[in-house]
Every structure is written in structure tokens, then in C-alpha cells.
Image 1 (cartoon, rainbow, N blue to C red):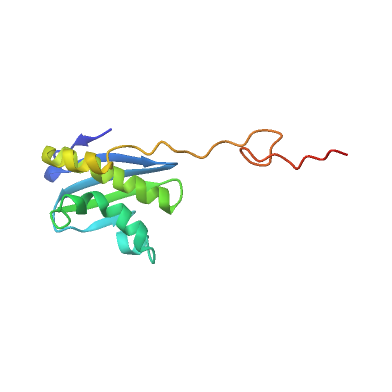
Image 2: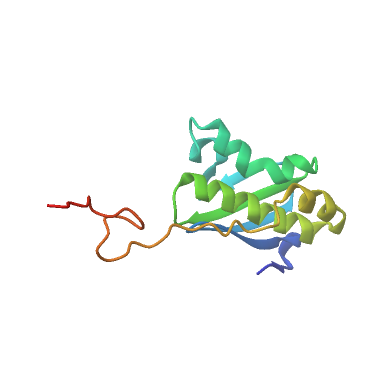
Length: 136
């Protein structure tokens, strides 16, 4: 769900991937990205791939220095959280400017990745792995 707020034209959107949920707020600014009250570089310290994934949507439309992004993300692992942040930023950008939609949609950033971990079944070691069969 996404909504517009009156305070300094803040735009809210929600992004999801696996078990991760990201609440994203964008507003016009200098291009600062904050995740859970720390900078993006600090949050994904040492992992350039996750930083790139998280900022793909905003760099695709060339708005990296146009919006400030504030994210609260929880659940899942770092990879899922980076995907959730990308999804949330993409949704918020479309709400901010409808002209971004064709480009973001073509890149596939508006689609929620539906893949989830499969649950473990009883009698098995994991979701599908069975105990070793013994004939005798």
C-alpha cells in the first residue's frame, strides 16, 4: 500500500521480498539515503552488490540527487532487505512522478518477488530432503 502525506510532500510506499518488509518514505532533497536511522553505506557495510540492488530503481530514472530516501526495514536477511528497499523505492518514485512508471516497470522493479522459503514437512530433514533409505 502506498500513500501521499502532506508534510513537505512526503511519499510513502511499502516494498517486500521474501520475509523482508521495507517502509519507504521519499521527499525532495539532496539524495541522502537512510536505512534504519543509519546511512545506506553503513547498513550494507562492505557489500557493494546489496547497495547497488537497493539503489537500482532511483539510479535508473536518474533521480539519485533529487530525493531523500528514509527506510525502515525489518525481517529476512540482508539480501531480502535490499530487494524490499528497491521495491519500495520503485513504488514511491512512481507515486512521485508518473512519468517514471514505464521505465521502472520495464526493468521489473514494480513486481514483488514471490519466491519464499518452502516450509519443512514432517518425516523429512528439510522441505524436500528425505532421510537416507536403508533397504536392510
